[in-house]
Image 1 (cartoon, helix red, strand yellow):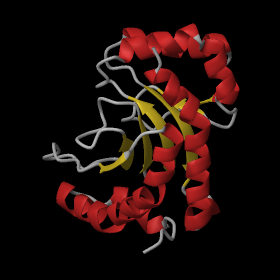
Image 2 (spheres, rainbow, N blue to C red):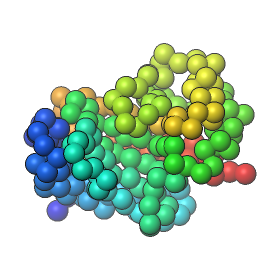
Image 3 (tube, one colour):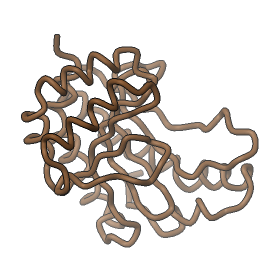
Image 4 (tube, helix red, strand yellow):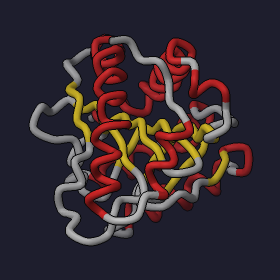
Length: 209
């Protein structure tokens, strides 16, 4: 099965009331598509980063009452998990899809990574295309466009990422639910590959000594 793209029904999953019903829709509508995307991209991303990358699909296993507002897949270099490592994500809220290089709060060396980025802030800023966005919390929809951020603005975000325990740094793309790109599986996969390739230098910087 090749990936055919996302439909409005996939995004409407997040309007379904109740944990069990929404989770059933996530599992039947979205997770098979994540499996297809992961199968299509994992070898490419492994080649780009120079090590094997493994697919992880969010299970939302800790939820007992509130249904998830979003869901995602991740590619990381650890077969057992992704949260403690820099990783690549593709996921959905009800109104947009996100493509991230994600550094989330579980990273054990978050402070060192942030310091590395701060020491190279001009290079980091130059590396990120102007049509990309940055988020400081993977649980929230909000993100700020790179076209609105100068080097000093980015340094403030990175300083918070370094100093605040729950602060995160996610960089990548938002694609609106009504963008035709999402309905074209081949074009969408090419866009994700391109986004990840653009962000590989930041991924590599995070691992550099």
